[in-house]
Image (tube, rainbow, N blue to C red; front, top):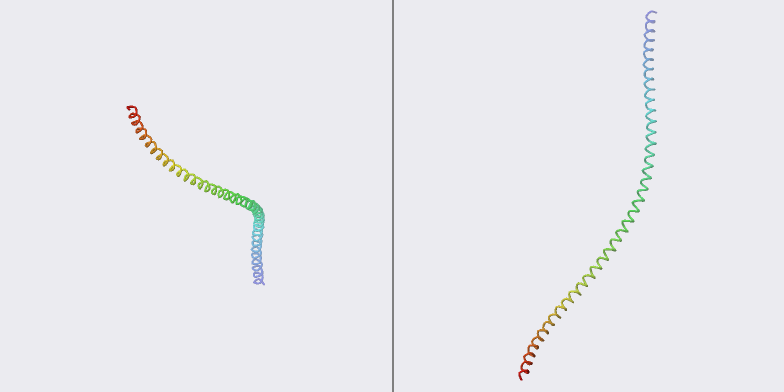
Length: 141
């Protein structure tokens, strides 16, 4: 009986020790569950915050898309305007070259006319000298 009583006490002590360990494990589990719940709540708040930021970014992206579209239109218009201006410049260059060509021709013609007139003047000068000589001869007579 004594032996059985010892075994019974030992079994009770072992059972009590096991129950204490179970209680400790339950406390640890509850602490971990509490931490998990807090983390889940924090994550849910973070998820909501991120969803809000994503919605804001989506709205910003739509706005930026509209701006890009508008800027693309402006860029195309500016390119068209630039091309039109370049065409006008090209036309003016052609006009200038034509006028320069005409001016060169006129200058050449003027130079030829000047040479012709100088020749005629020289001829008239010679004629005048000749007439002067004749007048002198006639005056002597």
